[in-house]
Image 1 (spheres, helix red, strand yellow):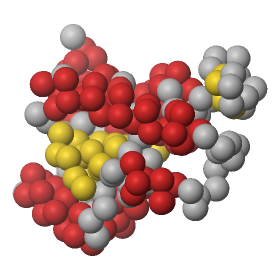
Image 2: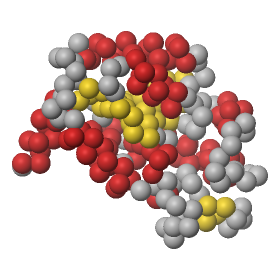
Image 3: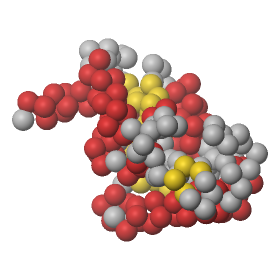
Image 4: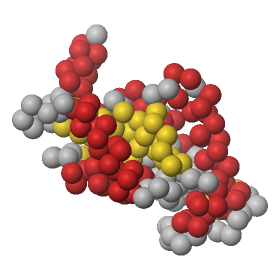
Length: 201
């Protein structure tokens, strides 16, 4: 009960935004624009929580001789959740005027972690078609680099699976705004920022 009371007190001073969706759909760009335009906002990126390359918990795709980086088990979600709670607690007395502070959570599988999802006051999911996604992804460099066939064999199927899971969970689906990630980022940001400002006012 004490933990619930503490979290309610903390959350009264914070507005938490979750941004998820397809790879290369503009999640991080949107997160950065929100951070740059809302005073003293903070970003936590799911990509910072990938397990080390030699971690035995990774799954290997035998036919590609490559690790599957598109599973929730390839990430240390417990550490991410713990870091989020620490941020909320460490700033509980740091109020910006009368407005709540903004915490932005950015992650391609963000809404697969219920405890983190439940912290979000607003959730956005950026979508792309397979063709749009590939056109963007093929020009990016990852560490380790994608091997030939990884996008078709792993990246896209895992994204579709994730998206379908969200759609099937009615209570979750109804709390998410789906956004076409192929739209101009300024237009996307304008839509999101207007809503955030309304909810913060």
